[in-house]
Length: 272
Image (tube, rainbow, N blue to C red; front, side, top):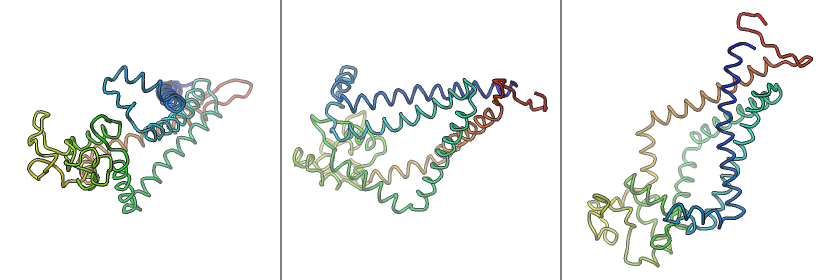
């Protein structure tokens, strides 16, 4: 076997071993959450004093479990095929692995194409999703759950309030019933050294003491546009890695030929 083939083999082994471990971990956590939520959340609660998982809505936990199971299972299976194919020099497994990665790449391209082609529908769907998470799950006070923590972080970091604007919180019955005098959460207010610039902001927000008129959807889009170079760089790197893995897998599949269990690979010079 040539030096190039050896390098390709061990690169694929190392690459897929990392994703094999990551996929297995995600799959394990997802199954654990789905089968026995309480024991997992209690364990996390001992490690994290905020104990936000125990206060998170059951539907959100179930959704997280489904996502972890699906993503973990796909990653686990595909990386397992790639690792075993490279390590045990199996032409069949390498072909299947290469085809699966190619399908993933094609699917990513289709999703991106549809996102651009149906930009208006995608934007409306994303706005509706963001708004629904506020209306259904956002709460404060003694129920600091995952959705609330995520939204507070987004609003504080991106300097925004609600999906479209602060009026989104009026549709949240948990919010209006628990805090009838407040107009916006504290995360919508301007802070100095982690303290509210104006203590009256949650009750009477203004342009000078809050971000109440700036929707988080627009803030997210603006942030993506401002960091377009990074987004394009990450996407290009991902595509490059996937294409490289496909080429290496198919190259090794061509090298591994097993007549009478003798492995032979043609050198770049043409010698066996």
